Image 1: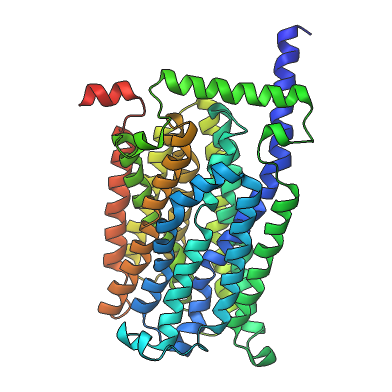
Image 2: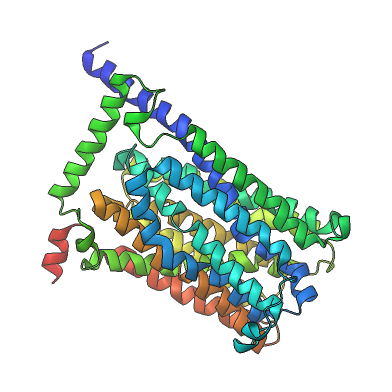
Length: 455
């Protein structure tokens, strides 16, 4: 065996070792994050009736999470880059788990004239406040992990790793859908609590426990990973350093001030807004859409089992899509085609009414499409962001884009309230958003030279 072959084998083994040590921990953290973020979709099946919440109230409350997320996203990621990933990611998980558990008390707080001043009932005001605080608490986790992975993996190895981490979105729904349905159905009335109260309480516990695991097990970077030999640490650090140097040659951004004046950052922020709008609009409303396909109002377990179907396909598709992207080295069209699949799913949902099989097919296309889009999307902006600009740029794209998480669910809620429960117009509007995102993805430059020429 030649020296070059030995070096290649050593490099592959080193990065495989890194992946096996940090990705599973990040993965279970993301599963817990999404359980706490989207279990509101299942809670709504009971809670809306108990608290007299209209579709508009639910849609606005589900989405206001992302206003808190937006306000605190960039500061959170900058703090992470200063204090280290281990402490900050652990803090994020413990705080959001605690706030998620507090939803048990959404109908117990009395605000007097404060809620009335906002035109809300006490329960409605508490619902909005806790969703906002949940977003503020979780702000920085996802972009923090994306930034953290840039400490360990050069760009050529990152898409598949990001995909494995991000399958946590789909896996959390595959696991969480039947569990959430079962809690609603079988825990309802236990200890005098409604099923939706048990849902928030029980699904908050994993976040707190995993946060403590982060504190105990997660290294801040390759230099502090005791399970890597000195040679392995040196290899990882050198490959990442070389990747950063390549970004400089391609016109990469390094300083925080550069981020907000670069049109590439704004272009990808708009793309992320479009994709996230579609993803969360369907995600937060999926249990309701499934229930309206003819399932009995109290058969929550069946809703959960059927809701697994789109996410199961999404898990497989995300991994296969990212592997194909890594093998081919192509990112842009992989991301754009994901949005085109999303459009196809939304158009199908708009056209079939409440026909069960076509509706499930449409939901599956949306989850697969948005999943395939997002696992390759982040390779585009991180190809020119480095240093402090990576912390600020990733956080800004994610925080601005995640405003779509407020816009999408709120859009569906308002349209359903105005149209007596019909979502067709909302699906068409979401399809237009996905089309805009696909067009910008194809046309947006990633090198400074391209920006200069275009100008």
